Amino acid sequence: MSRAYRPSRAAQNATDGYTPAVIPVSAALITLDEERNIGPSLESVAFCDEIVVVDAGSSDRTLEIARAAGARIVQTDSWPGFVAQKNRALDEARHDWVLSVDADERVSAKLRMEVEHLRAHGFDSAGYRVPRVAYYLGRWLRGTDWYPDYQLRLMDRRRGRWDGAYVHESPTIDGRVRKLRGELEHLPYADIAEHLETIDRYTTLWAKQAHEAGERSGPIHMTAVTLFAFLRNYVLRGGLRFGTPGLVVSGLNTFYTFTKMAKLVELQREMSRKA
Image (tube, rainbow, N blue to C red; front, side, top):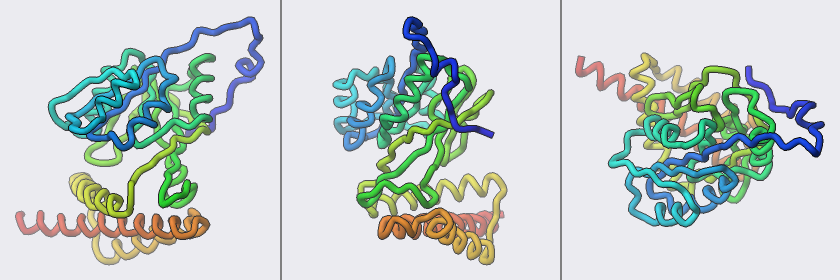
C-alpha cells in the first residue's frame, strides 16, 4: 500500500556544504487542439529539465504556444489512443524520470517543491501518486468522487508503462509507489455542456471496455449502483459542503454512473441479437 511521502531525516538535516547531484526530470504532455489550456500547464512544468509535447495533429495555436514555451515537439500522423500516445511521450523523453501532465492540469507550487526535493535528494520509489483537485463552477472541489483522485504521474520509465484499454489509463509500475502531498490542479471543463459531451463519449468507451472484460448489468444492479453513487458523492464524500458546484458534480457523477450502466445493458442486448 502506498504511503504519504515524508523527506528522510538525512535529507532534512543535510549540511550547507553538501550539494547533491540533481536528477534530471522530463515533463511529458500529449496534445490535440489545446490552445485554451496549454499555456499555464507548460508554465507550471518549466522547472523540469525538458518539456516534450507529443501532438496528434493540432489545427489551432497549440504548437505555437508550445514552441514559445521552449517545448520539444513530436508530431504523430493520427490519434492512436491515450495509452499509446502517453507511452510514446515516455519513449520520446530524454530523461528516465518523467512527470506526466495533461494540458488541462497544472503543477501546484507545493507539488513542485516536493518534486524538486526528490530530484535533489534522490527518488526512493519507482513512482509517485499525486492528489488531483478540480476547479469547477468557480470552486476548487476537495470532495465527491473527484477528490483526492490520486494519479500516478511521476515515474521512472525504466520501471513502468502506461496501461489500459479505452478509458481511465494509468501506469503499471514494477516497484514501490508512494504518495506525495502537493496537488495537481485540474481544470476539466469549460462549462456543463462540455462536461455532458465528455460523459457521453466516456460512457460509450467504458461500456465497450466493460463488456469486453465480461461485466454485465441489469435493472436491479443499475438501480443500486446509481443510488449509491449519489449517496457516495453528495454525502459520504462531502459534495454537500460545496453548495451548488458540489450538488452539480454529485448529480453529474451519478448520471455518469447510470449512463455507463445503461449503455452496457444496451450493448449486451445488441450482442445477444447478433449471436
